[in-house]
Image (cartoon, rainbow, N blue to C red; front, side, top):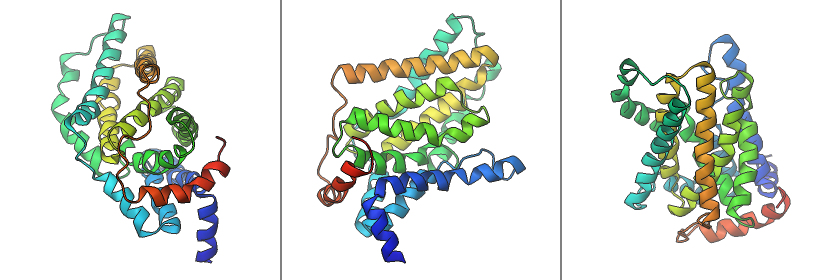
Length: 282
């Protein structure tokens, strides 16, 4: 039984991963209506899906590679600046644009919660299931790795964004995310691919980027607006991230991973080449 399951997973590993990512995330949809889970999705589902698929296909080498990249911190100071600074700066730009277009400026009382940003960031980053950072080992650490083997980083990003948009469906259904957030996911995935490839495939840097975005934008500045101002803030956030994504593409910076010194990389490529041709459209 286990052998058959392993064989099927090896032949269709990407498809199995996406199915598991949905299943291991959407179970929360059943608990949400009765108040047993705060949102109708479990953010760490893609990470758990990656662990299951790697255990069935590559075993310890694949799991070790994933976990090592989740704690890979030696990437250069500039990538920490990008992880912490880019989401913060882009959020601030969107806030300033929103205020200039008529939204009320945040009050001193609303800003009084800024000392809580660092503790919130740490909790979101370290605790599985509390925020988006734990999506990253699955989406980028597993799926993007394989999608890029025979595809350009841009094509791989757009394919992954499609699956990512579908994954967020439960949040869309309850109104927690709206149409501007769908556009944000697409352009955001392009920017995250640039960061992932540029920093030497460090999942930690992506988790830090995602945690910063959730903390600064989702948990702080976005809460300062309501009604039409909140919708406009969402569109402006998507717009500024879209501008960054276009700049990355236009300047040719969306390239394959900068670092290729991982000893597991060659066996991984050999394993993934068949599925890159068969599982998903190129």
